[in-house]
Amino acid sequence: IIQISGLNKWFGSHQVLRDINLNIPAGQKVVVIGPSGSGKSTLIRCINRLEPFQGGEVVVDGHALSGLRRLEAVRREVGMVFQSFNLFPHMNVLRNVMLAPMKLRGLSEAEARTRAMTLLERVGIAEQAAKSPAQLSGGQQQRVAIARALAMEPRIMLFDEPTSALDPEMVGEVLDVMRGLAGSGMTMIVVTHEMGFAREVADRVLFMDRGEVLEDAPPADFFSRPRLERTRTFLQRVA
Ligand code: ATP
Ligand code: MG
Image 1 (cartoon, protein in one colour):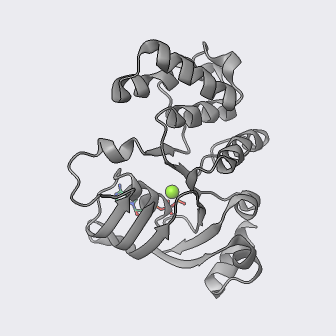
Image 2 (cartoon, rainbow, N blue to C red; image 1 turned 90 degrees about the vertical axis):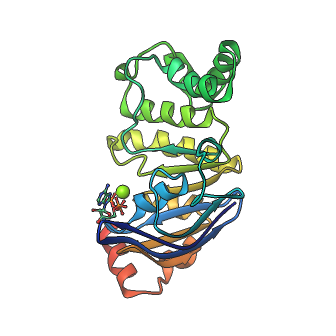
């Protein structure tokens, strides 16, 4: 469902992605790890064209992104969840989830409300629908952010360190929602430091360093016998 070939990206004269080649079939769960500044966020932001790139091609569900003028087609197939939840602060939880389907998919108010409530139930937060985001805990806000992304019925979900900003006791509830989503067959790319989640949910773990994908293996192999010394050193620090 995602084909990345020869992807190169620079910020000014600084090359942040170097010749990335990746083929991700529908339904696959990919976890991306690597040191700070290695290009993890930039890579997943290229998949929904939040970042333009200078070389190579990214094809998402048949859409080649480099020449694409209308990004909506891709954006609606690719949901994204960030470290900072980015909910709209002036709208209640329900409205946060209803907004995009009404604006971008033409759902009626009633349809959007039904869909939003179903999703809020799915992430375990229906009772909080009338509250404003600021009244929720971090874990609850992140679950709303996941519901909001799912409301567009994406085929692919990107997560950029979704639990890094959370207090430790709230990490589990967000990972539970993500596990549930993985079980539903969603294609997922997850940047995370949660190695337990990677072991359990990933089909494949990528290790990035300095803009390159240095390792790409199923978790059993990745964690027990990494190919490179650099991966080993990194794992010793995080695991
Ligand atoms: P972290 O683990 O800290 O989130 P990361 O692996 O996600 O790191 P990126 O955010 O993708 O790394 O950044 C890769 C490189 O690109 C870094 O050197 C960073 O400084 C640089 N970079 C990222 N965004 C920009 C930007 N908007 N302008 C210039 N340089 C940027
Ligand atoms: Mg990042």
